Amino acid sequence: MKSTVTPATTKTCSNRTTVVDRMSMLPDSLLIHILSFLPTIEDAIKTHVLSKRWQYLWTSVPSLLFSYPDIGSDIYYNRLVEFATFVDRTLVLSNCSKLKKFVVEFEYDSRLVSNVNLWIRFATRNATEELQLDLYNATEVPKRVVDWKLLKKLSIGYVKLNDAVIQKILAGSPLEGYSEN
Image 1 (cartoon, rainbow, N blue to C red):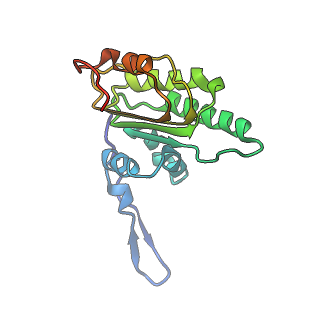
Image 2: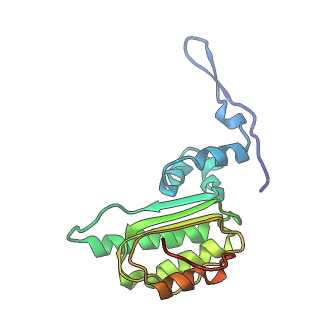
């Protein structure tokens, strides 16, 4: 990604003090690094309104964290579909070819299995180092096998896993075997 630095803009206030816009002096790479510390990618996306320069900075953030905490409301499934659509659209716009972290947390619904498979495929294709799937109340996991080439950490939470599923998850792992302690 090409780094852009814009000259600082100055404004003169009515009392003759000069205000310098120091944020405009920072390179894109540093701004993207700062955005990566926001709690979720949704927070990073909201910065697009700051200026034209910020409009697409979020698309290069190397940590994508999606969280949908609303559980069990009357219109829950409709909102869950909106969340899944938001994740899908965000991934389409993301242009980060190597992700440090990819996290999805939500109450799993088996009707969204194709979305979750898409997200896992995205994480694999984008050389994700850390993949965390917190699929609350899931009794099954998507059928997608995780590619272990660059993955350093895998966390699957709130899911009931049997030995066959664990073996499938570990199929591409550099580990020799699997043992439960």
